[in-house]
Image (cartoon, rainbow, N blue to C red):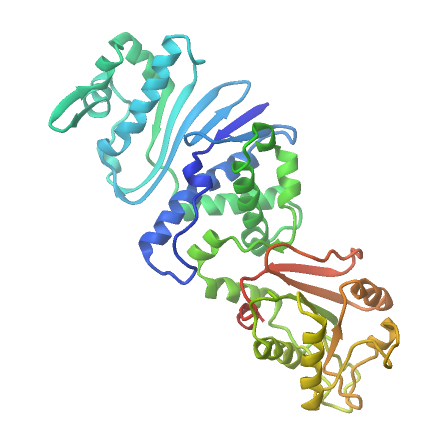
Length: 427
């Protein structure tokens, strides 16, 4: 089966002209309107029956579904703040009739037409079944600059042909609202991906799905806009947080970070696991004191070396991506001058990195409060030395993940951030 979904470039290339901090409801509603079409696409992909069934994301108006059984041209609209009136849907129906005219002329293949929309209210104004008179008077007749136009006459389409058009036309103004469709997507994701819970469906896989669809839609070559259901599931089946700005704009950054904190970072100072915090910074846009505060913040929350009697003392590992070697040395100097104890796996000046040295247990006596990993290539070496211990990696990245753990037994969470200070709100 082949399925083709067409998108307008005004949707796929749209970039919000406001920051994440904007709370204007009209801005949020506008983004929901754009995402609504993406969400419908995600849902349609997940509803495909076979793994080899595929979609092609195109660059024209709205959505077309093309299968061996039928072809459907869909106008997908989200009018969350709009009352239904015939005039709102009239123009899309006239555009569908234009295509039908081309079919009659032999320039296009015969397809079905669906106007799929959500309205705030006014649904009672639309009566079914659609009669010929209703179609002609309410949807195909309009006034422009005080002149009345009958679109069917302009196209030279008679009543018999209009009745034929009606057999191909379906109008659904009772489409689910944004949140209802999202819940349908979450349920569909959970049914397709094993051991997926509500949190993962909402925060991992849905965001990944948005990324896949928007990336496909931006491809110029049609061959690069094809993806099978099997490929789609494979590409979204990753437990990493893609920081989709539209998603965050709607959900709210504070709520999003609260969800992450509640899921992963509320049980600190309880389990003596070997925790690795991998943090990426922009080397051209950060403040040393802010980064140092993050180091101290992580240490305070995930180290416990206070008691002589506690056999399960521990402290976290830290790797900072993007920091210059001399800058890392300056931070270490400041920490050392403040009598903040850390270890980095180098036993003496000129020595090689020793993973056995850095995994030395943090205790009341040595007061190690953090273990700093200088080089990304050392991480796997350290993990291998911790063979029989529970290990967790929390990777924070700016644009793309930069570390993949080769050990499947290690819990590895990847979270996209915008700036270093986001960590305080997440952790």
